Image 1: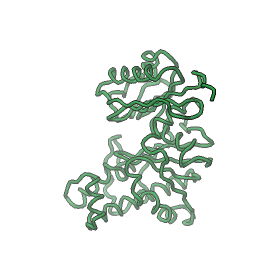
Image 2: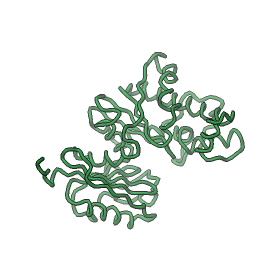
Image 3: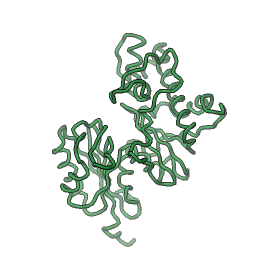
Image 4: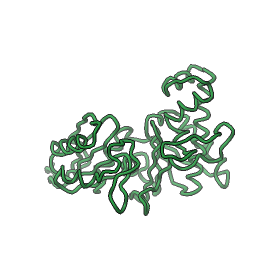
Length: 299
């Protein structure tokens, strides 16, 4: 096998709340380098940590996935749960630290791109992606291209309003973004925990709620049922606007069959026709989708 040119190497970096992952793809889409470091708490150490990872990875194109987005005019980073990055010109700072051109993208968009290219969304024209973890992220890929929108705010599914609210959803829960009733406050690990405490008066972490449900505890089962129904409504709302070929679910809560295998028939009644058939798949690359998608930002 002929050694691949250095220029065909693609470096991907994914900035998470607790860790920064880096990989390198060769020209045959094989991973030839992987490393993970802890995410520093402050902004400048985070920039230095990313630059060190890229330099260790060697030559090649550089793509970086991060929570939040850059303002399309000023380049100022915003809406990140890594709050130290907000208000910074992160791409400019990373270019200066790394010393070569880079591409920076929202982390959920990187997840979506990876799954659309060679994951659960491969072969589909329109792929809507959800990452269901502590929060609820979204991404949209059409014909292999990330859809960002004029304001770089496309596919922020977690910050659409929870549709068709019921008495169980009322009053609308205040979101960290300052608005009320955002989908993320209901369908996420945080949302599950808040909902359980609101209904039962008992504070439990998400894994314990799920364990209780699996053991047949009535309150845990009811909490999972509310989570499932709310997610079905959110997906139907997206279907009514985009009608994607497939929904791909990633993040920790995507392991739940209630949010993948059992979801399609619950989506249909909330669609315009009441009969739409939703395709729902679990992410193929799991937690590695983000860093894989970052490496593909130059494809």
